[in-house]
Amino acid sequence: MNKIQETKYSDKNLANRALFLLLLRLVLILLFSVISWFLLKILVNDSVKFPPGMLYATISLLPMNLICFTVVKGMIESEGESLT
Image (cartoon, rainbow, N blue to C red; front, side):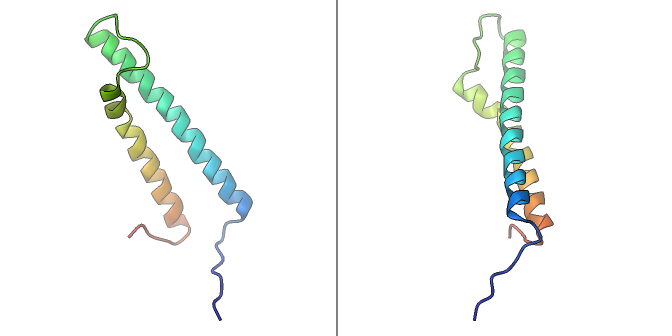
């Protein structure tokens, strides 16, 4: 008979962690988009429109993805699991 492995986190705690990750991603997207827009506006010219072009947006969101990956990795490891 298979037993379902219970985690130390309740469904409510898991939902709170998912909401935290969602809000973190939204804030980081806004933050890095604005930072890249300001940098382009200062370094290139004043006619740069918001949001930045696709190439610059993709490059500027790389740090956001790395930060979120680190947070998710920490969440998984706090449950005693591993990514590998």
